[in-house]
Image 1 (spheres, rainbow, N blue to C red):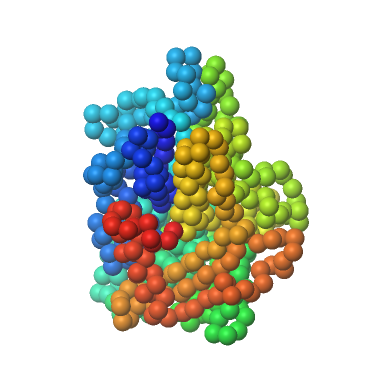
Image 2 (tube, rainbow, N blue to C red):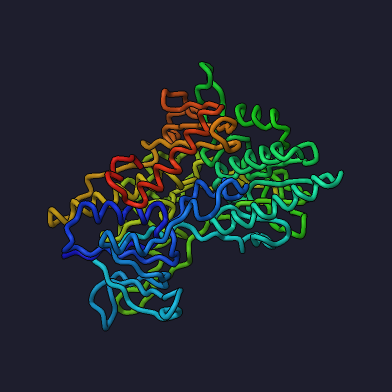
Length: 485
């Protein structure tokens, strides 16, 4: 009998647990440890953030579902990693701490045969002074409760300007020089702009995009060259066209380093320190690892074997110039090289380098997007980790047959621009691959039949359909596994 411990119940962790339970007999134990009691379909937080969906529409409780499906569950957080056990416990284990109810603050050792670290990122608001959701007129849509607070603040502002001649400034973008998730931020700014139109106050608001991108449409992937309406178009040109059509201004190459009440301080690539005022802001924070520590059986600290911020996997972490980066640097199995029974799919794995070209200001400040690994890549890498563990258990020996690098994996970014089956809109961008072959491609990557973009009502339908499809899948309803990752 094997015991498989899954840390985290987001897209990656929940996907791993679901596939493991479906394909392994009940003699094998699957245990999920997560501080969150609810599963949330994160992409729809955007609609919560404008009040078009309620939080209850994007979440459901985990414990009842796991109980029905035969998956163990502990509402707790990981404290430290012990991949060799210790003097009193011969099996590898994770020290966890309860976060709710009678288990609050109580620690215990949870042993495992296989460990999947799917803890995702820490929302590192603390890396930017004053970037605390709900304070200083700045908000977040990273979680459903953050998004709900953002919606209430947005609509309070809309109500104020409806009753007066007041002009306001809205600032949306990235809140750190190395922040990622530009796709979600882009979607939110389009939805906010549409919401202002809906309430007849668009003329009373100046909307500005602020980002660490060198060019619009970078999305942490150094931009794309796509097919649009039969023509080749850079993502930069598409996003500029969309912003200009909607009267959205933009500030690029910006590292936000401090937020005060209605005021952001930022540094640009020219080394200039500037400010921007606002009445409502939504700034995505930097993502970081959780700061876990790891120890061997004697109690010696071995964190460097497991973590490089995020978890170390089968990537090439050799420091090298941008010109020497290779698509082969990226992992394929998400297996830790020191401890072969530990894996880290989704955002939990440490990328070998960025995808966008690294840039520094004249003062030496790094200003460029970190690589995105959310959404489709999280689900795909989680499934292949699950399949490799399933094969290894059934064969009685290690099997890493299932592989998937971001260098041979595509992704779809579907950004709604309003809500409604007849009046909604959306921007759809599908790119392949996520990580290009740096040495043999001109950046942005050459157009392929799998890299294309479109704008219109169909994009909204494509965005809305996965909301229902993936919640159905996450709830493990009949034939859920037929829905692709």
